[in-house]
Length: 133
Image (tube, rainbow, N blue to C red; front, side, top):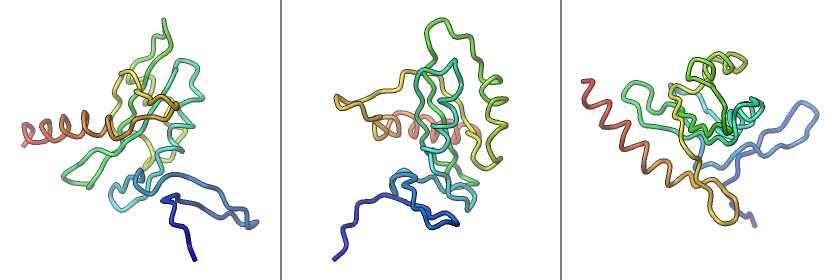
C-alpha cells in the first residue's frame, strides 16, 4: 500500500527525486504552483536575514499571493526595497508579493509555526483587501 505523507517531490532529468515542500504549504498564485521552501532557502542566502517563513495570503485576483515574513539579524539595516531587489534573482512568479518584517515563530522542535502565521496575516490581508475595494 501507499503511505500518504503530504510531501511534494520533483524528479530531475537524471531520475533523482527531491522533496520540495508539504502539499498543504504550496501556494497557487495565478495558476502557478509556488513552493515556499524554495523561496525561504533563497532568502536565507541574504546575510542580513536571521530567519524567514513564506506563506500564502488570500488574494481576490490571483487566488493567493506569497508573503515573506522576515526576521532580520540584530543591527541589520535591510528595507523592503532591499529584499525586493535581492529577490530579482528569483523567477518573477516566485518573488514574494508582500514583505513583512517580524519575528518568525518556531515550536519547541524548531519548526516554523506556519498555521500561526497564516492565522495572523491572512486575516490582516483580507481586511486590507476589503478596505481597498
